[in-house]
Image (tube, rainbow, N blue to C red; front, top):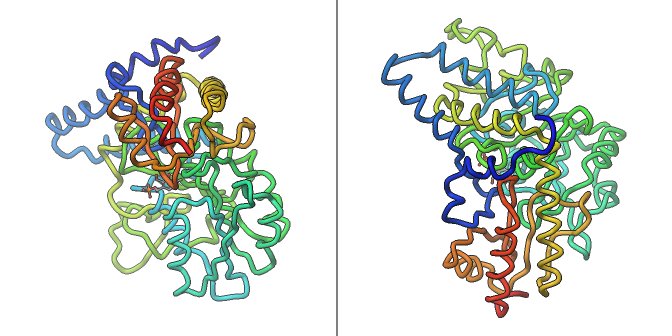
Length: 383
Ligand SMILES: Cc1ncc(COP(=O)(O)O)c(C=O)c1O
């Protein structure tokens, strides 16, 4: 798309915004009319054709191609999974922790799944070391430098923290990890679709996420990116027939993993969800990530300045380079404050003592004003 996108026209694609101030896109992105139409198309195809394995496969492949474009990866480097957790599990199953490189370094910004799965690998010899926050709530590079060493196999980092909106220094951490012979898994679930995620520029080895938040798809579908240089050396022990080199081989006498990242898949792909994810990704690509990122940066910046001016304490750093689409507001009772805002038609969510306002490009200045009014009207619940 050339020039400034028509943001009011984009906003009009999301009927929920007629009734709600929706600031929970990091929880679940809104349903756009074209995504609703894609769900209906699935039902029409189902009614018209019954079984349509070939047609369904085409939708999964379109999602794979779309994700490859968004991440600046090759389609051969993308597995389409049923969740981010499924992708991490498949990758974990392919890693060898029996030798001296058995450490997994995990930041304290991770979503639970991105730590729990590595702790589960203790049974296979993995040793997990956590990287904690500094006093100011950030995790500085030095903390990673102290944890990553010659025994480290993998570093699990989140791009934008789900609890407080902090963005990690992915480039710096990846450089450090590679210097020390470790690989990096980036969880970009809280950024992809809102911030540019270029896996080649970042140099990460793996990336994981899903399509229900900023990618405007639906729950029940995710992706795993695997740098193609690693694929031949990684054989998942979590798999199935859709992970085989030839899905139609139906060979029960051997496991013959696909030569590409499809080896990280398992069974029947999420068919219905592929229709929706394809439509959501198409919307994002039509507007373009640079315009979406700039719009969200502007909205969140305005919101942060307004909130700070109104006396709110923020858990998210103001520096654009150190944050993403989330603005986390400190509260004495975040659950109660979230409920009070809901009474006014303002949808936010809360974690870790923070009310989280999570913006997408469909938000506008009126949403910021409504949030400010709602928070100042409930000042006694602000920390
Ligand atoms: C950063 C992050 N990682 C992982 C997950 C979990 O994803 P899934 O439920 O697809 O496994 C979430 C879900 O909200 C998330 O925000």
